[in-house]
Image (tube, rainbow, N blue to C red; front, side, top):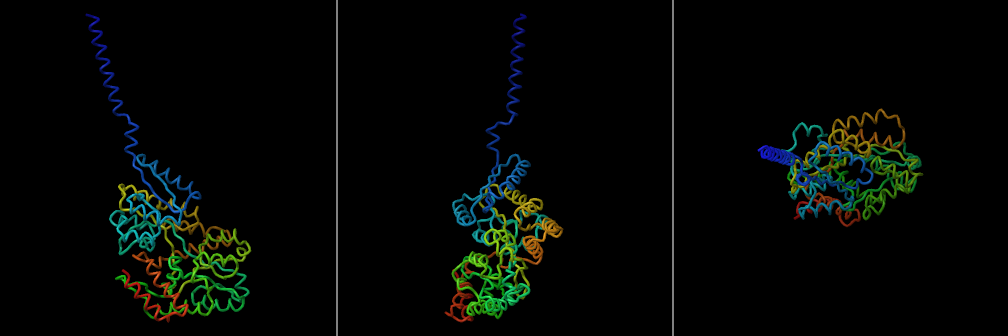
Length: 430
């Protein structure tokens, strides 16, 4: 009998032990189940590796540590490959969850209904943390498709030696002064004042100059509104400079890279560029670097200055829009923006971050040309804006204006006809 009782007790004990083990196992995380529950956020940047690999690895670690169920997958795409790569991915329904673009190109995707509209997804108090003019740059008809990230404003780099030889004491601040100086520099030194491209699809500097001169490019209905006295005056400005041989002939065939080459060779007095380009000049042309200083961006009678914006957008076909948005806002919060701006020597779009950035610059006692250029760039941000806002078919608008300007420069049509034809070409586009 005792043996029977002992066996029953042992059986009960083993049953209890089995139940306990089953309960423990059922409550323990299953590696396979855990992996299957992990959510991956794939994001693309433009040509930031390897220079900013350490920065982004730190951002990724910080985000993942507070989101243990999330795995971030970072893919860095070469600058010149991004447009074709993201277009292909969107068409094939294989796009990332978040991608770093600029408003002009992103607007093309937004106009195809390929991007998530963020108006109802982001609280107003978050929107107010960003510079308002910069936030609106990623919108079409008040439909927001992007989150602002870092900014750059052009400065005017100038060759002090060439200006001295031409008897010019201060750099040009306006296009009117630039035109006057172009004649003096050519007469006194045989050099050109500057180079600006009229090649469609390249730099939008000429398009932006029209706005700075007081031209409205399109009206609220998307129709051309530059066939006006202001538009005619702006067209004449560029045509006259070319026909007076005050612009290099290659402006019709070469892109902005030619402006860089000519300045580094000492063949032009002014170069519109970012402050950080001084580092490149120091490497490629140390002699020119030694006589280079920086001034504010050249503008027209409006006083407007342009700013270039980089943003983050969310392709519409993502299956984790909430997480993509959360990471986009994390990357662009004040702390992360300020850290990236200092590391990359760009400007933040977050209000608190830019205030701290400017304060640090003003407290910096460094007197180098680069430090001066950075201060000029940052301080003009307050009045800077995206002069040519995101719009559908912006590339066609630039093409219509540039090609007609070229024809007027070559004497193939009058300036009046060039303005009229450009407007009609835009309005009649299919």
